[in-house]
Length: 355
Picture 1 (tube, rainbow, N blue to C red):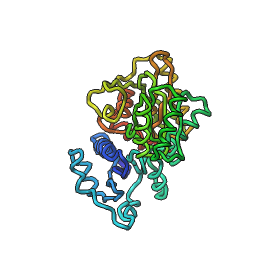
Picture 2: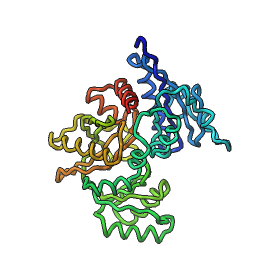
Picture 3: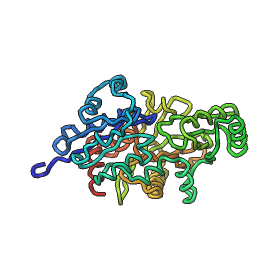
Picture 4: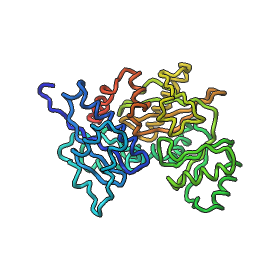
């Protein structure tokens, strides 16, 4: 790296969403990759932690969290109630950062909010832009766009502008769901991740409970038919040209791929997935098509269902800020495709520099 200055990478992590601790785990992985023997001559790191109340912490305090091997307890002392002033204006060191690496999952991060804020710094960032992030996070808008393009999805209903806190509304919606969709169904908040707030419902009473649970996270809800499927995932990186990783499969012991199973040690990851080459080829094609449709670039993970009885492919969703934890599929997919975590993180930074 003689003659070249190191780039300063600004990691932003934590946040007020229900995926706060997943974000911390992802940030620790990326931080470790940036200071690895492979990358330490290329990059400096500055970090900015946001606690669960939205309070921003400076670089020294944030690095303390990233360097700590403790998972949860280490952040307790940073969980301060916010003061009246908006303090990110004091703690973001705009001028020292060359490239931002936001790792906020869920609300105010994956939905494009952080991308909009960082755009004012006029510095590039790793990941997609405001539009693609917002559309990728919102399951209702995403599904409506995919419907117009005839991208295969499971049958679904979208619920919005309804006061699900009222019993008669929940009752009427449960009747409509049973009339229009085959049971079981999955009830999902329109804007959430890591399967938080999602329930599988097999009868009316379970649907009513699931609606209430989802509504506590988001007033907009998606209900999908539950098929007997295999869970397949594909990674995407790039800007003008998008590249796909190998297709991977998650085998889990639970009834469905819920939050606990996503971060369980009992899962079996198979990469490449044991599927027909034509199925793999079609999945990769749909992955690129769907990202293009939502203007998603930089990096993403595209999730699919493969129905066991028919071998039909259904697009599930796109994650515009997939996890980088030790149990996350995205880095595993790229490791199996020839990029280890150090190379992957550097590649994503290079892609952002070229955008």
